[in-house]
Image (tube, rainbow, N blue to C red; front, top):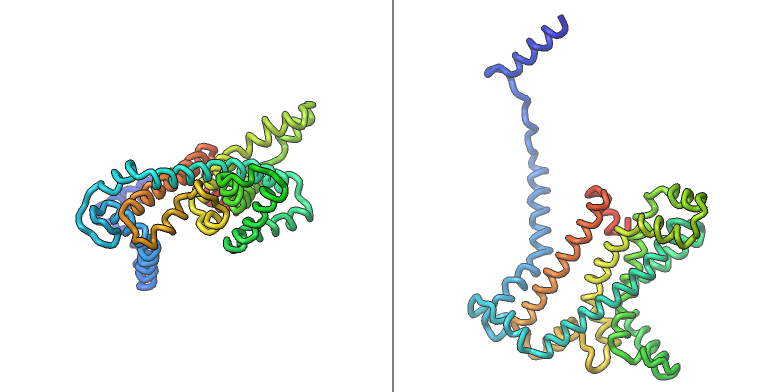
Length: 302
């Protein structure tokens, strides 16, 4: 009897004249919020879109559009000053990412696996590093490097690449610490305890269990540290030495004589490099089994 009633109801629902579920009508507030969201996105991304478009400008100056072409990208290959600035920026970003990943990974693991009152003090210090204006960092780093390099006789701190790498790694280290801590804080420590119960040495447990659990966040932190270190204009302008001018400082000095399309071309290439790095971060975390919400939380250190 129950089966007969169920079949009758299904046929009634499938009949041509059967009433369909009403779609929820969109109110004026929903439409207004959608339009506002689109306008905000356009406001945020319009400058980036403009610089990408003008990177294909064949004119002599960036603000003077003469036509569409790839002359600006070809100019990069024949200007040693641009090539040197880009290479210095990439080297700085790579070295800074290595420093930030090494320090940030250890800090994140310590905060996640050995919590206590010290954790909140340490998080406060990391937050201070994150929110301190770059001009303050730059003014503090310059005499510090001079003291280490000249007064203390540590020659490596007279090297411009070392100065740039250390200066760029400050903020990136805090970011990596947040990401690794956020990753491990949601992971159960039973595997590490089981490894210890099976008489594994502490370093073996750290290498094969703890670091393996944190590896997606470590790789994500490395890529984010790399992208963050590409653009550190204020600190770089203070701590650089002759012969190690990074790309942001080169652009800053080029403003005085007028921006040229090759500036936009290199900026477009670096934008693509940043987007690729962020896509790799999301891919690494997705391969690790994270959901979209977890990926966003890990990348923001939440």
